[in-house]
Image (tube, rainbow, N blue to C red; front, side):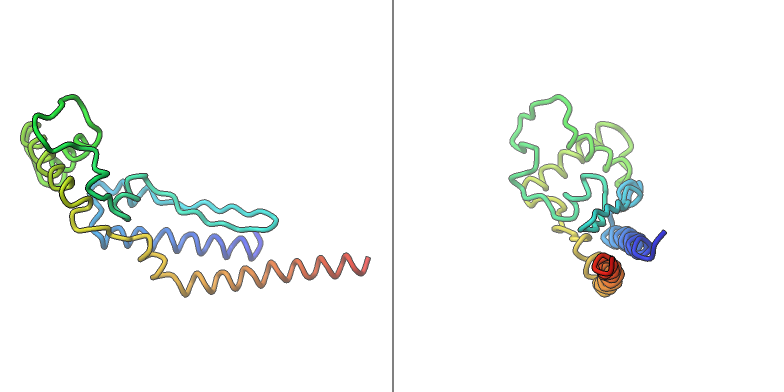
Length: 167
């Protein structure tokens, strides 16, 4: 493994660790699913190097928030009935986080939370912005890694250019 690959791997690991910590600081750890879903993917081509940080889709809603008009719920009774992934998720939240003891209580809490989301958005406290906080917390390390990586890659490019001219 070359020095440039090691730089990318170290930076990716730092970003994953920092984002997991930011998620915990924001209080988004109930089952650990979101925190544990975070992983990195490194892609290198002849002209680019990209570190992607992947996480469960709902993490983006917690990070950036969801405005009230995008909440998939109509709080004006009578409710349509049937199953909604959104309501089912809130019901599970009521059971796990709030200790709802039976299905009827959990469903009642889920609808109360959905009504609140429909009025103020999600999360109720506003976007947690853990992605931006991760970038802010690692800004110096990101800059240093980019500089080190660029120095190695440009050095190789210059060496190859010189060898081509000399040949």
